[in-house]
Image (tube, rainbow, N blue to C red; front, side):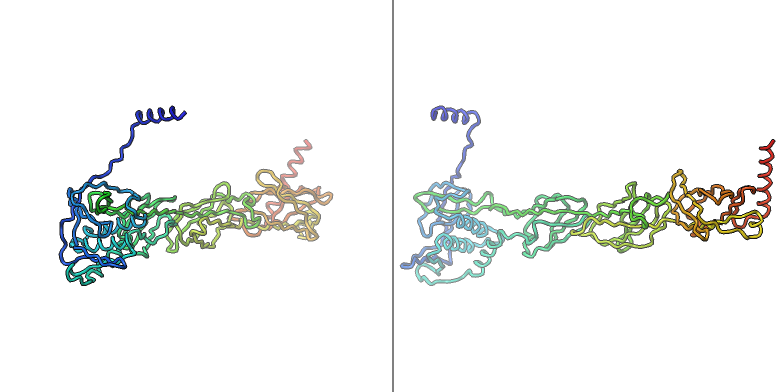
Length: 491
């Protein structure tokens, strides 16, 4: 079985190829002396002294640093380089990463062109790889006076390393309103070291702020990157088993931070109801549909309008955060205008506003006073009040909408909403006629109260519907017409 597995593996390598990992080869020289300072190492028992030298890559001229304190560098030896962590250097991963940063920010970094930065970087590298022993400068290997010439420079280099991975102090999850600008201040004051690598929303870095402009809703991503360039390649560690291991200055990995921006918008929904029924169904022949509202900001700038649809609702969407005033500008047919102004606020915690708004239907109070008597009673204004008479009210579609019976005073009072009606008398006192059907309308032009005095005459007198204020001429004409109809019938 193992034999077949090996054959299959060889075939796969043959068919797909093997990606060769090429190690860097380099030669280093430490012959360049650095004047003005020398080094001293104290291991707890003895002091060791060395002249300060600059190590360079023979091919590139790039500066390198000793990793093994005071070990011998064999000039002209060929080294193998490593970019990724390798434990042959006997370094922890934390030491590995710190050495990379020391090499990058040391000699050759912006403003660090004086050769003093070579010795500063070298001392800090030794202190990192061998923290149990002390490393300092001396004036020279003969006098051996310990000196402290670079305290400020050390602080600067340590500060650069400490801030290397410091990210802007801005929340990684940002919520904002549509059609707005959000300025996010970096409390760490490092955002100017970054650039926008990728963004799904309009964003820019201005001074110490990330400024975002939103135009549409949704989740957006912004990626900021802090890049470290200036060298030809990455920081590299070089190893040779019989010579000093070294690290050569180069670029380090970039640092990125990603933000998620959630752009929100609000909405205002109006549910329209009848003030009498508290329901979405209108009264009478009125209609809640078609009512219009304007939506304004606090400066009275119109941001939109809402029209009530057939479901008695209307919605305005994509509204930014803020305070808004809602006011009805056109009521539905058959309703009075709502004169109230409603103030609402849209924010992250209250995005979708729902308002149930009422309208009062146009209506009239119909008052019927029912009389009965003879023609002489009518002429003498001595007709009697007629109680117990039933009336029915029908809408324009022939639907019965209300029934009422006259009381002991012969009266009926009923409030009817907007619409066209027919009044029918159902019964009458014996031997008395009923009034003819009466059509009337309740609308914008109607009186708040409609008064209908109705009269039933004896059967031997033609039935009549006489409104208050009818002239004697009208009554006589009605009697003549009735007599003529009777003559025609007899003939």
